[in-house]
Length: 120
Image 1 (cartoon, rainbow, N blue to C red):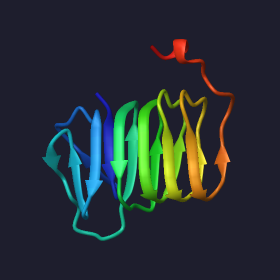
Image 2: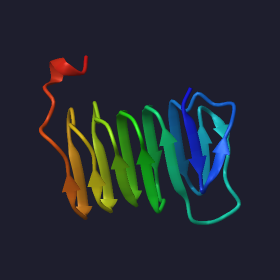
Image 3: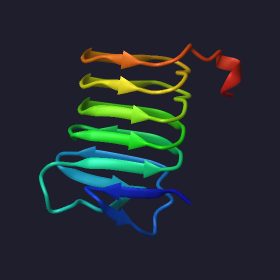
């Protein structure tokens, strides 16, 4: 089971496979776990299938990711991304990327692209 921290508080009782942040609400595997503070920092200790964020300060994943999409905030993934990773405003740092890494305003630091057969 993954460990997920939102603004330094551990979220318990979730497999943490899918995280969505929209309209200021944090939803993990269908459960609302929105913190009281306005700024959001997300740390996933382990792997994550999908993470969608409309706004946060930073996303950190210590393992691999299926796909990550954010409108703002830096994204730091220690492992590989098997799908796509994107942010409109922020830097991206990750291992190999299966499909695309994209930012409109920021830098991308990644290794060579995976072949599609490597992640199926």
